[in-house]
Length: 348
View 1 (tube, one colour):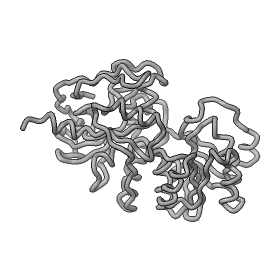
View 2: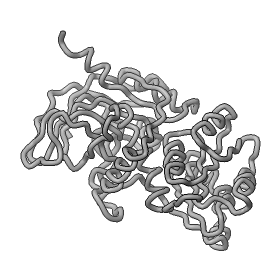
View 3: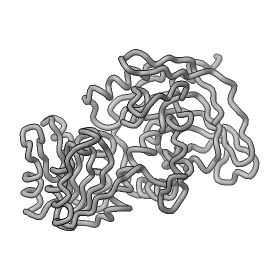
View 4: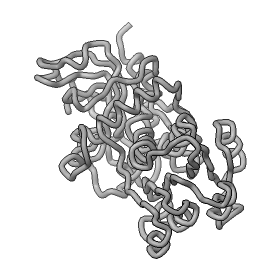
C-alpha cells in the first residue's frame, strides 16, 4: 500500500518501537485501487502486541490495523466507490468470503503489511467496505477488528437467538460490542468486570446480570446461578488459558465458547474432559471476512448501535494511547484522531 504520513518515533513507553511513520507523496491509485485520506484508527490488543514485540520484530512497519477515512481518488475499473465516499478497512483484506484459510491471513495491516497510522493509503478497493451511514471516522475506525470479532462470535458462529444468555468478559471493545449485539438480537447478557464502577456502566448499557470476578474468583458459579442454573448459551472468551476453565463451567451443556483473546495467558491446563462431557463447542475466532463486515454494517445501521469510545488521541500521542490501553483503565475503544493533525498541516 502506498502512503504518506507525519514523521514519528514511538518510544514514549518502554518496549515500544522502533516504528517510523514517514512522510511521502500520496501514491495515485492504479487499476482496481483507491486512494483514501485516513481520518481515524483505533487501538486493539493486536496493535499493542505488534508495537511491543510480542509478535516478533516488526521494524519499519507502520502500525495500526484499523482505518477509516474518505476516498480521494479511484483507479480504473473501480465501481464500488467514488471520491467523497467514507470507507472502513478490513483486518484481513484478502479474506473476502467463505471459510478462512491460511492464504487469507497473509496480509494484516499494521503487522504483515503497512498499517493506518498515516495520512494516506492507496490499496485495492476490495480491501475496504463502505462505512456505516452517518458515522464519524472515529466511530467507523472501531469496527474492523473489535466489532467484527464480536459479530462473528455471536451472529455467525454461536448464532444466538432471542432469549439466549450471552456471557461477556470485561469492558474492552470486543466485549462491549458483544453486549450491544446480544441485546439488539433479543438475548440476555451476564457481564463480568473487576470494577464495580464499570459494572454499573455495563448495567446502564443493558446487561441483565453482573459479576465482579475479583470478588468472586469462582465466577462461573455466579453465571450459572444468574442464568437459572443452566449456564450461558454463548461465551465471548477474551482471557484465554487463564479464564477458559471458568468459561467452560459457566457455559450450558451444548453451549458455545468463542475464544477470541489471550489476555490472561497463552498457555495453561484445559479441562478437556469437561468440554467433552458437557458437549461444549469451542471455536477460535480471528475477526472475519469482507462479507461478514458488510452484513455487520447493515445490522449496525438498522439497529442504531453506536460504539463506545473511551478517549481519542492525536497521532502524535500514539505512544500515550498505548500507555492508556496498557493501564486497563479504559471503557470501550481508544481512538487515534488523524483528521486533527491533517487540518493543522493544510495551508491557510
